Image (cartoon, rainbow, N blue to C red):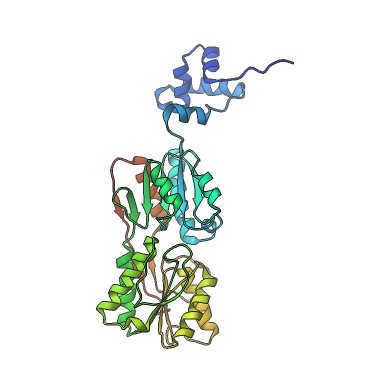
Length: 344
């Protein structure tokens, strides 16, 4: 049986009568070679069925893998159904394509062993779109000592890109206060993993979900400054989607039918809450005002929604740019806007 000769950069260099470095540059530093020389190398490589150097070997030599990891809060399927995350990933992907960088997706809502195995993938840095910052995966990623960029929350040690979630929620609450509302229900994703249920706004909330905690703090600040009686308003923490928005609205309004405004930390929550209220014969905004967050596009919304508009695609683009540059710690603030529509 004839043994098939293994094709390598060195064997191609020998066959073409050029140096190993020249062939390596064709793949790794093409700007160093003339167009004609690159064409000659690539045409010959194709003729011998060679499709580029081994990435594992290259990573061992250079210490670079050509990939970045994106760690996010929910399940793997969630990122492909949530409009905010879809746009964020579109921004990340567009910049990765320009830089010829691959993406490794790492969900926090997964089996612990699977999460640990995902962190074994060779990556040159991480984007943390995951706000439960005490999670084992987050700590392990930070401990690897590679560049990190956070989205929607800030640490002193790492670059970040975010809107000012505190001020954004203040703008929502001050709008509702100007409309004369006195009793509020907040529908929120969990302050910490596994937390769920109803609590009074007068009770302290602790957690490692920075987005939730920052938005909640913005609400409390606005309500306290306006002299709102916090005991008459409540928070409901629950999983993030429309169905759970319906369940939260039902629980809040059964707990206190006098609540006149539902402050939702996402549009998905808000649309679910609106569906429940309309099904109960309530008029929006005459009987109940509802606000969202994100300004996601919905073909046939339940009602035109008052919400905070941000640009997730730009957030993803800036995050990957900061990660690939990695020159110094930069905190990039994105713009936001309160969009007032019929729901208030």
